[in-house]
Length: 176
Image 1 (cartoon, rainbow, N blue to C red):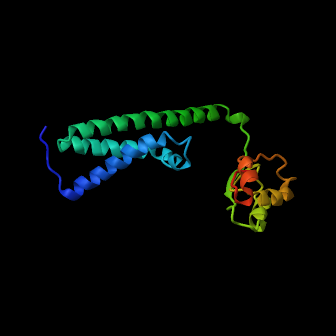
Image 2 (tube, one colour):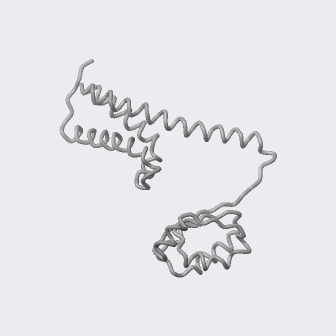
Image 3 (tube, helix red, strand yellow):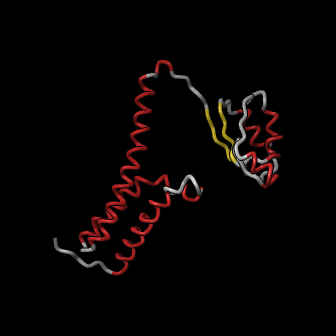
């Protein structure tokens, strides 16, 4: 296999992509511990494509060790992505098999913004949306008190991160 030499900007771009994918892959494994790492989990398929393409180019340019490392990263991400994709495909088959017994549930997620002190707009939307389940993010104790007005429409409530709210007061964030 004949190798070729790339110009400096091309080498820099390849190195940047390789570094991003190489760093993003192990950092994504820390998602359960750090929310910032959780942001990297959702790009496994992009990691596969990028690491495969850059790995091939590195192999073509004669950088075999870097190419092998990047292709191993590609394989790891492909296996991880395949597990997630296979789960959703199996769930889809299960859903279609039980479609005659399907029940429709209306669900929404709404970020109320913990600094927002006026719940009227959000509460008006919640009343009008005719939802079965709602996830409210960044709920503070003040919001919890205001949301009691919707207790008839949403009789079942669960507050996560309530311990943070008790410790930090109105600055605490959580989900309802």
